[in-house]
Length: 115
Image (cartoon, rainbow, N blue to C red; front, side, top):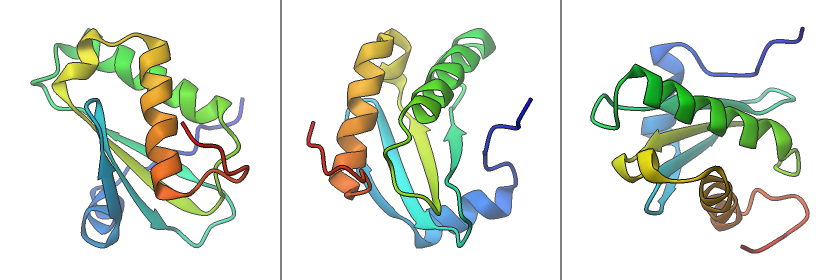
């Protein structure tokens, strides 16, 4: 099984927080910075204010699946999603629409779609 391309270390997150460009909506803040690799990586930051560990892990699984399914984003990016409290009550389809909306604001969709 192939590993999921994720950001793990604090240095990677801090680099994205300091150098990245950000847009936000009601569900999360998306920060993006180029990573110099031939693939994109996802980092998820979910506070304890969002819910207990079961809720936070469920949100992370949904966001990783959305990232995995939407391969139309440009390659070579580090993407950090900072989850807001409203996400705990959102459905999968609402999260997917919010994710694609932020991707279109960042102009990282390779097919140029607008949501």
